[in-house]
Each structure stands twice: as C-alpha cells, then as structure tokens.
Image (tube, one colour):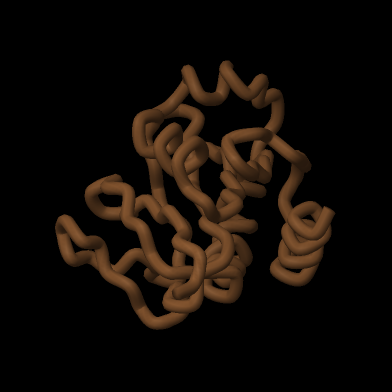
Length: 146
C-alpha cells in the first residue's frame, strides 16, 4: 500500500488520510463527502489556514490578497488556473488580508498580492507582486523542488 498523505477538506476542514497513489483518483472527504480537490484555490479563514498549513502533507501556496487590489484581481485567473494544474500535489489557498488581518500581520504582509509557499508547516519561500500563469507555475515548481 502506498504511503498515506494527510489532506484537509476544503469544505469542512476535516483531516483525511489518503493513499498517495490515490490522490489523483478524485478522493472525497470521509466526513462530509465533498471532493478534496476541486481544481481551484480554497478561500480560507485563519482557522482553516492554520489547519491546511500545519496538518497537510501537501505543500501549500497561499495568496495574500485584498478585494480593493487591482493587481490581485488581475492575478486571480492565473492563480485559479495554477490550482487546476497543481492539484492534487499542491494546495493553493486564498487569504483575504482585509478579512484576516491577524494572518497578514503574522506573516508581515507589506504588499499584495504576496505568495507564500509552505512545506510541513514552515514558510519556504515568498514573492510579492502579480504574476501570469506561466511565471506563477515556474515559481511554485522551483521553490517546491528545492
């Protein structure tokens, strides 16, 4: 049997243990039966963010953004497209800095959009500024390959 992977449900935030070999087979949450991967970023509050970053076996890339931010809106389609391509091996999260100011403060977000990559609960890289899909995918793959 393949090594299990811990995946947080985007709907109910339950932790699910999935065999690594079955990640791409459309796994569903054992608790609420929602799909664990929907091919799009997961909008999170502080509690869900903490759960995804600290408990998931998958690397996580969080987009810190705000509704008033033009570059954030310009990058949103690229981020959504990247989620569709990177799942189920990377989880992409959206953090609204206006709704979650404590998270923005905790990570010293000074400009938006800011992307932060996490592995095993630790920040491994960050970049500020909007990116197109190609540059975004290159950045994620590079930082997660290190």
